Length: 179
Image 1 (cartoon, helix red, strand yellow):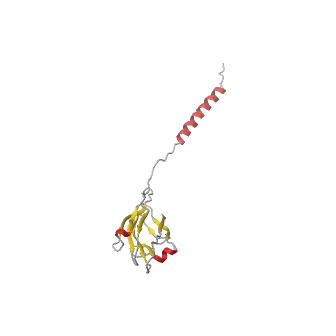
Image 2 (cartoon, helix red, strand yellow):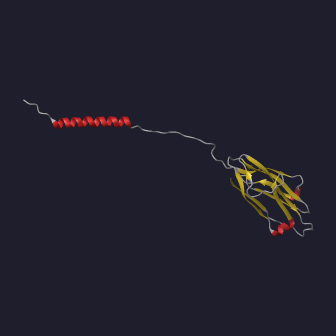
Image 3 (cartoon, rainbow, N blue to C red):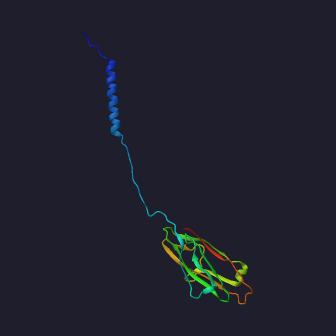
C-alpha cells in the first residue's frame, strides 16, 4: 500500500512556517524610534521701559509758581505731568528723570514728538536732552537693563511784560520700540 502524500496540507504547513519566519524577521528588523526632549535658551522675553526718579532742579521756580510738580502719573510709569507758572523773563522749570529699560530686550527710540504751538515758541524755550547735554533723537538706543537720565527744561524767554495770563499746553513724547 502506497502512502498518499497530502500536498495541500504540506503546502499550508510550509506557507504557515514562511509567514511565521517573515513576521519574526520583520519584528527583528523594525524598531520604534523616539526622540523626547526639552530646551530653554535664554530668558523669556520681557519688555519694561518706563520713567523713574524725578528730581526737580534747584534753579526751578518753586512755591505758588508750581501748581503741580512733575509727577509720574500712570501705573506703567510712562507718563509725566506738571503745571507751572513762569512769570518773569528767564524763569524756568527743570527736572531730570531716568528713562529705564528693566526688560531683557534692547530698545531704541523710534520717534520723538514735541507739541509746542507757534505762539508758545515766542514765549517759551522747551528742551529735552540727556544729562550730558546731547539731544534726545530718533534711533537712540537703550540697551536692556540700563537707564539714561533725561533733562527736561521749560524757560520763559519773553523779555517784555506779558499782559494777562497766557496758558500753553505742551507735550513731549518718545516712542520706544524693540531694537
